[in-house]
Amino acid sequence: MALINCDITVLIAEHVDMNSMAPFMLSSKANYQLIRGHERSIVKAKIAKMVHDPMLRPPLGALLSSSALRQPGLDRKVLEPVSFAVAKELESREGRINSLFSSKSTSPCGQPLMEAINRLAIFQDLPPNHMERLIDGFKDACRVADRIADCAAVVHLEPKPETGGLRDEGWAVEHEVHLARQRYIRSLPPIRLAFLTLLASLTGMEYAQELQSLDSDPFQWERVTAFKETFLRHGTVVICALLCPSEAEATDTAGGFGACRSPHARSESARYYYTSQVDVVLMELLEYERGRWGSSGFLEHDGNVRPIADSLHMTMLQAFQGFPEAEEVNQLPEDVEAEEDADAGWLFSINVLDYDTDNANDDPLPRISIKPDPREALILKWIRQQ
Image (tube, rainbow, N blue to C red; front, side, top):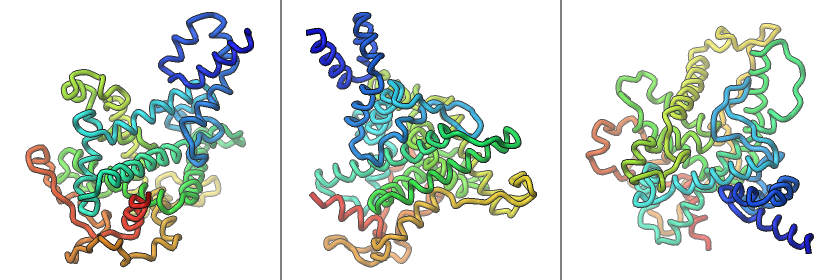
């Protein structure tokens, strides 16, 4: 009878959420010891239940935490593989992603992205079932972005050779992380690349509206480009840190943290940290464009300039170009009409800097009329498949 009770206890632990896990474990000493002793098997079951697609499962059972922690070559803490902390992080991410695509009536965090999606003429007038499938695709793209960021966990857990110093070690780890993320992006199928590209563009457009004194910034476009690269490096935490309402704004809007609880609301510390990460990418971009990469300390021991890998954003675009779908530029779905405007085109052709951000809260949001490119045509085809 005791064995049956133990099996039932472990089964319950596999299905309860992590907020309920602590009181369940503390309900008795026997439960605590039993659940602690079966932590890995319980977490493996939770991962399998929460992440059905093997491509999205935590590499080596490890994840990056949502909180930032400065380490050489690492911006966030690597959670203990196959631990309760990993299960908690997965639940937190899923809640964060759901908040990002909630309607404005239920969560202020969902407003920026949902409003951006609604401004795209190509996705206007979709029936409810197609719109639901479109949002599912964007949610999947968020999970893909988080999985790209988690490539750093694998590199950090691997044994590393001795290097000449802390700075060299940090650069070597960062370089390996970047290459690992590139390999993962290149392994993605076309539909995921299409959604990921569109999501990065939408978030970049929203970030441009969030910037203060945009017209006075001489690097305004480069900063938006740096934001999109930062999003691909860090995942959905960047969206929440830089695009979601602040905790105070969420409290005023929702009447409390019930609808938009941290980390789904933006904290000032997170905003400061990820703003600095955008600045890091911006500096890399400017040094490269100015031809000063080699004179800025980016050198090997032998004096040769350190290799410059393509950005994750460029890798994503190039990966899609390698598929047959990329050649279908002029092939539209049967019921989609192309715009006659010669300036119409894929979202990347939109100059987000033309928006009047000073009156963003007063004027109705503009409707963006664009002609679908292969990515959008593929997305439209995908959401209509039942």
